[in-house]
Image (tube, rainbow, N blue to C red):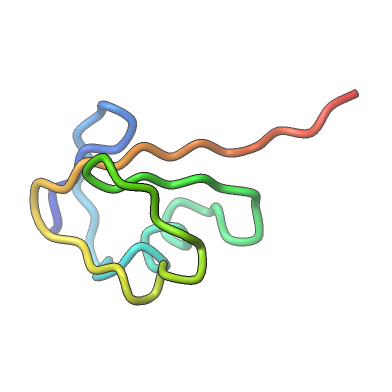
Amino acid sequence: MLKLKINGEGRELADVANVAELVAALDLTGKRVALEKNGEIVPRSQYPATGLVDGDELEIVVAVGGG
């Protein structure tokens, strides 16, 4: 189990080793997401290469369309 803080809330997730897997685990695949890890923006192209460890703090914003 990986212990992360996501949008200020403590979460424990299994089978999540990188940001791409986290996005999939949170059912955000295919959505317009902005993600910050420990204070630094992570470009979408770097999601698979950006590993996660216990204690990482993430902020995730999902764009919502409207009119």
